[in-house]
Image (cartoon, rainbow, N blue to C red; front, side, top):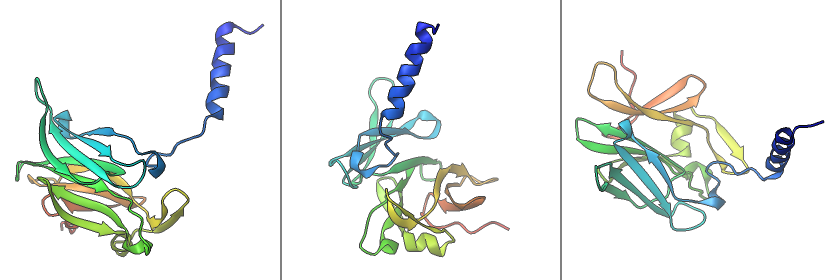
Length: 187
């Protein structure tokens, strides 16, 4: 005879199997979300103004004792955001995944790099393909360059930092957080 707890667990599993899966970044389900940054001192609050698309705001906050301090605001709702801190500029840097759709998919914006509330540089699918990324066709995101978003890392032996993406297994690109430019490998 089955125990009641086993029967309940089986019923819950059956219900969960029947629920539709929602992909991360599914553009038809925009929702407000928070992404923490370096050491949990900063965070991004990403707020859509529509149920799909990239219209909205990113608000960057510094965590304080009583009330968090608004640092920067960007007019965009991102698929993903990575924060970094620049000790050189004393500002929060932001790598934003855009996944914008365009008539010519190679011209659609994919990545934005910003610091201190100002856009530094953006990259299209064509830019990422030229850097060695492959292309993919997805029912969710359409045709685009493939990449995986990484983190913000310190350049060894320096006070500089880079945002990292991976374009193929083991192939990483580093972007300077102060300029948004692709960093050439050090020799």
